[in-house]
Amino acid sequence: MTYLKIAGACKLNGQVSISGAKNAALPLIVSSILAKNEVQISNIPNVADIKTLFVLLENLGANYEFKDNFARIDTRNLSKTKAVYDIVRKMRASILVLGPLLSRFGSCEVSLPGGCAIGQRPIDLHLLALEKMGAKIEIKQGYVVASGRLKGTDVLFDKITVTGSENIIMAAALAKGKTRLLNVAKEPEVVQLCEVLKEAGLEISGIGSSELEIYGTDSELLNFKEFSVIPDRIEAGTYLCAGAITNSKITLKKVNPSHLSAVLSKLEQMGFGFESKEDTLTILPAKEIKPVEILTSEYPGFPTDMQAQFMALALKANGTSIIDERLFENRFMHVSELLRMGADIRLNGHIATIVGGSELNGADVMATDLRASSALVLAALAAKGESNVHRIYHLDRGYENLESKFKGLGADIKRLKEE
Ligand code: EPZ
Image (tube, rainbow, N blue to C red):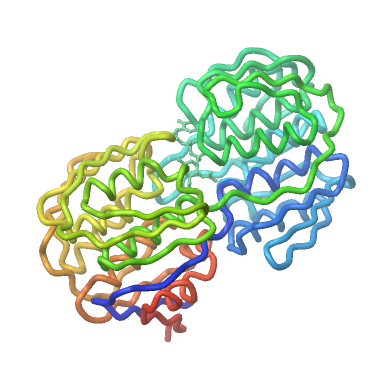
C-alpha cells in the first residue's frame, strides 16, 4: 500500500487542468449497453473506479480499449447478464448496469452493492421504479434478480437519487412506450447522460428539469455519436479549496464554472474572489477567511461531495462555521482524522460545528472515503509540519494524477510505499 507525504504550510501557484467527471463517465460508459454500434468517448478520467467498470463490462462480454483518456466500447456481443459480487463490491456504481441490462435482455442479475463508509446507501428507489415499469424483482443470495419486458409508465422518485435517475433513464430508453419520470436528479452528470442518449436517437424531453419524458424504442438499440465527458465539478471544487486553504491564487483550466455555482457562492461568502474566462477559472486570495454555513443538498444546491473539503477549509476561517449534512447519514468520518491534526470540530447528529482559527499540525491520518481523503490532503497542505495520508486507494478511485497536479501547483507531495 502507498501513502502520501505532504509538507504543510505551503503556498500554491500556477495552473491545473481538470479531468473529465468520474460520475458522468460511469453512467455514460454503462450506456454503451444500449448501443448498436461501437461507442467512442473522450475525456474519461483514468481513475480506479473507471477501470473497475471496464472490468465489469468485459466480464459481461464487452470489448473495449481505453488509452489516453479515450475509450472504444463494443457491447454488441454481450454474452452474460450477471454482474458478479467480486466486481460490484469494489464499486457501488456498478448497480448502473441493472436498468440497461434488463431493458436490453429482459433479465439480469446484479449483486447488491451493500453499505459503504458514508452510509447505508439503499437502492430501493431503483428497484421500485423498475417494478413500476413491469419488472419482477427478487433478492436471491445477495443478488437482485430482475426479469420482464419493461413498459413505459409514470415513475415518481420519493427522493432525488442520482444513480437511481440514471439507471431508470437507461431502462426507459429501450422500454415499450412512454415513461414519465418525476422528481429526477438534475445533476450535470444526469443531464449529460440524457443529452448523449438524445444524440443517439432517443426521444427524450425535459432534459435539465426534474420531469423527463422518454419514448422507449421497444428494444431497438441506439446509434451513438462520439462525445467527450464533461469536466469534473467535484475535482474542480477540490482544487478551488486547495487554493483557498493555502490562500493562494491558482487557475483551473478545462472547467465549467456554471456547474460550480453553489461552491463558488460559498467561497465568495468566505472572502475569496474569482476571475473567469471561457473554460478557465482563477481563485484569488481572501483578505480575511470568513466562516460559513453550509447545507448539503441536491444540485443545484451545495454538493455533499464537497462537504469534507469545505470542512477542512472552515478550519482556517476566522470564526465558527456550521455544516449540515443532509444526504448521507455517516459522512463525517474525516472529522476524527482532522481532530488528530488539532482541529476543533463538534458533531451533533448531521450537524458539524467547526471552530476556525486554531493551528493545524501535521500528523499521520487515514482516508476513509474518496472525498474525505481529499479533505485530509487539503488540511495537510495548510498544516504546520509534515503529514502522512494513509489508505489513499480511496483517492485513486476518483482523482486523476493527484500528486502530479499538486506538484504542478508547487506543493511538496510524494507517494511512498508503506513499510
Ligand atoms: C451519487 O451517488 C454519486 N455517485 C455520489 O458520489 C454522490 O455523493 C451522490 O450521488 C449524491 O450527490 C455517483 O454518481 C457514481 P443518491 P448515489 O442515490 O447515486 C438516498 C463520490 O464521492 N437513496 O443520489 O448513490 C441515499 O441514501 C460519490 O463520487 C435512497 O434512499 O446517491 C441518499 O440519502 C459518493 N434510496 C440520497 O438518496 C435509493 O434507492 C441520495 O443518494 C437511492 C438513494
